[in-house]
Length: 315
Image (cartoon, rainbow, N blue to C red):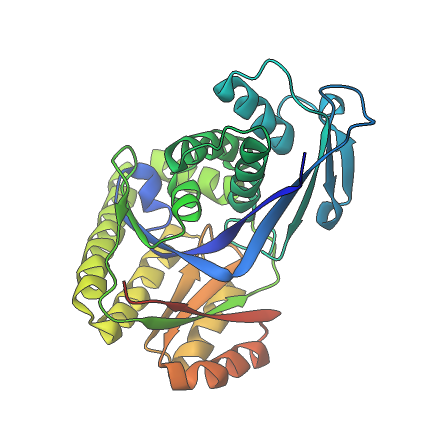
């Protein structure tokens, strides 16, 4: 069996994080500058059916059978085997690498799962469809995040900007005019499950207040869609600023994120906000293409441990 490889991009949420868990719309876009990659290779000298994971980024080298049922990699492969109704699994190794920051709000876990599923299903001669992959990755995301919205697995599987409402069909966004984003990493790990759980507890204590915040975030996402599809780039930035204020009221920002958001705005960004679960992780700034380097420098000077410049391209 030849080697089979697949990769998947990172992602950032442009609008609607947290509110999307409660049925409001959100917008996410892929970030192709960072990727997860999986390579499946035959291991003819190994026992039949043995699958070995090699993931140097997390110091993991283990056989499938040695991992617990709820280990994300093991769970992903077992669900794939079940979906494909495989009777015999060729002995193989799956090597996984990624340049996506872990717990940085950029979909690292979902991207790894997408890449693994694509490479593994191709290696057994039954490539999974995008719909199947997205569904399977959602199941794995429940291990990572508890109550995921489904937006990460969707945007990463399809690798296109998406307008997403939980439980509804995927809508690929039409981008009239390309726009440039600078992504900055606070360096603070932000486990999504914890932030999502805290928001849920706060919502349960004060549902009226949080439903109003979710409604505000949803309305911003709808306006964001109109701005993207009509090519009003600077309007996207204004909406990002409004979305960040809503997320602050939800209690999911932190001083490090707020400092970077303000630094980006001071440096000339059209708008800036946290992206993802919050409490650390990443923030994003909408900039003129000619200002991307200047804003990225300002963000690093303000404490960002790394920056990525990405373009959401006209479609």
